[in-house]
Length: 399
Image 1 (cartoon, one colour):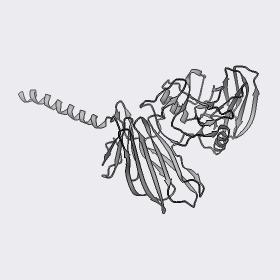
Image 2: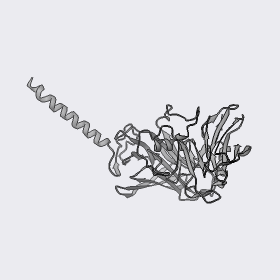
Image 3: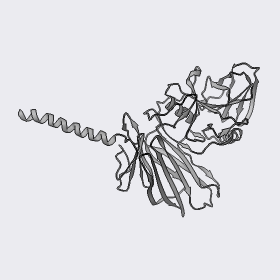
Image 4: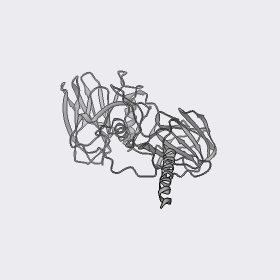
């Protein structure tokens, strides 16, 4: 009897100590840590002695066999389970052989890793850049030798788990609620926003051999609005892969290229930034659908799926099918336009051509709709106010 009186408290203390030790190992650090050897990520595949695990306040990832094979986000104060099978640059057919993997910069605030590999007689240099305060990885790869053949190349994310089917698609808008839209600018110089995890596409021989991407691991970064809003690492924020190139130049030229890509069925979406100007040299804003009120997580998710529009003044809101959603042929797509200075005209574009238009004599509010035609790829709404400023919806895809 005496043994149990002494032994149970001792056993409980041992269990608590073990749990505490496990929690400490799984808790995110205050800065950036690099750990060599088999990863501690739950369900991770980086089991070799040469594996490298990077831990940050927002997420952790492991590099093995020359690429990222594990990644987990912070959930409830601890790292969760492995979410990825791999994240890597894919130059085309053929195996990549590792030459050298090294940490070229490591402080508590910043980390840079360089990876040199061989592919079909060519050398590639890949970099992984991580900042303590920014939940994601800047990925870049440079072809060190000129490639004389056409490449189907780019970064690709392969997930361990399918995208959560329970997440709302924001497709059908039974009623438009203007207060559910947030205007901001993404601050990590994202270019086209992809719905897919595969950024590979064809590059002609002699094209630039530099490839970049942003692996979002918790959110898409700071947002700018009339008041500043900052991201936080959140279980609801999603893992995603995005093209990372500054959006610069003339918006109309950029829009022309995007429409060509929509014609090919590429689900890429409009974005804006301080260096992308309209004809009057003004910067636009991206309005994204944020019905749950989680500004950063909702905005990032909506922008990545095209549930958004770009505006240099007026506003255009969907009533039936959301931008970036899919419309059934012969149904009706309806929109609502708004402008404090008054509206001048509106247009509907179908597979790269304007097919309908309205003159609006200064009304500050205007609602209209058109039937969805069959055997088409996309449609887009454009509106202009009395001062000549425009707003452009992202495409509505036609089933």
